[in-house]
Length: 91
Image (cartoon, rainbow, N blue to C red; front, top):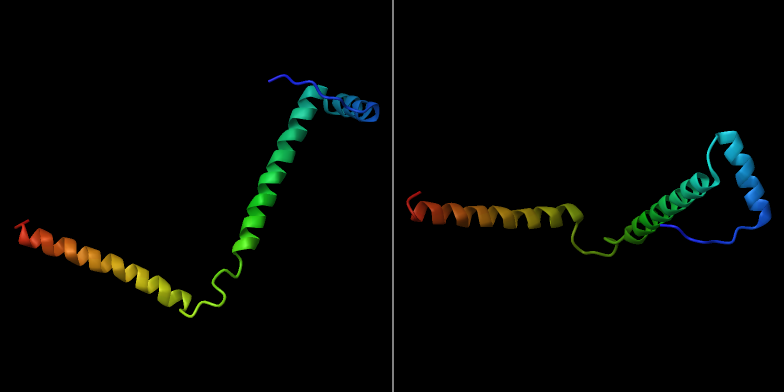
């Protein structure tokens, strides 16, 4: 996609210098910069989500391991019911 943006003269000069040094066009440098900015944004959001989730279990009465065991025991109950149905069906 093409777009029109205003870039200050000092930044154009810096881009021109960088382009010569790195043997890249100004457009390529701008695309790379935007790509890095977007990647940084996504990383910041990822870290913010981790921070928001940190301590989420705090204040819970049930221990985390006990909670996990209780949830998994439901799977065992379902497996037992399926097995009983298969046996009843003669399979």
